[in-house]
Length: 304
Image (cartoon, rainbow, N blue to C red; front, side):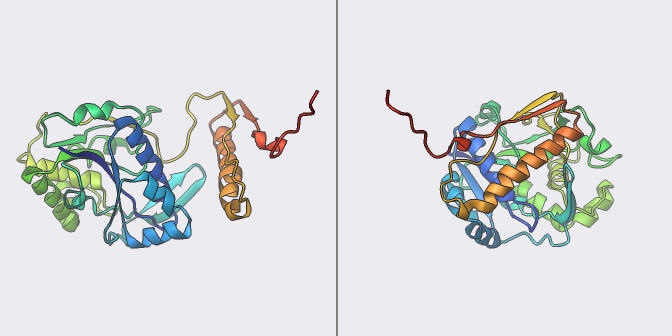
């Protein structure tokens, strides 16, 4: 049985899901020791070429699956990252097609911003369960993000399942499940009336939760699932940090002019963002160390 990870990434004008998916893929490959495939669309491919990261993407992913961009023009949400806030399209409405798109017999679908930091999920490849979904979200700071939405799709409705991590075997049972997910998306307003949730923004978590509820005969059933998700709120907060020693930078790129914007984004923008987060989070001391680049390209040592 073939095993692998699949990530959906559709860029909008403001949010770079592809760069996030590169990091997610590298960590998944390193810690789970399986191939990783990317699902994206033609306009995002064009963006990769314009941004000169197409080579990095092709080297990172074992497969690049090109499909139509989700028609999520009206599906917009607020993105918050420290002081950075933007109202932008949320192009993620095609997760229900993963059954048809995956090249693997056993698939782990993860969000583009999900970081696989351990090999824990490797323990679930051979579990005899057709479908496994993370049942619980935990904020690493112990902060409730949206109150009841941490546990239920609405205040008086069914339990929330988190489509951030979903593992499934490709068979007839899971085909029915993902067809149901697509159906819930198509009839989202109708299901919002039945399950009493706000339909303004389409959420895969809600669609997956409803599809599983239907598959279980409209009952709550205790069954095996993936581990809980550990996450942070939609802004950068440094947790229990007193001192930061900042050494991160983009260095050793000799073709400076070609990479000038990347240098500015990483070394100037990244450092500025980190300093702002440190200030907001009450960090007591911020130490910035320059790289070895300040010493020039080489060092001449006189022979004694």
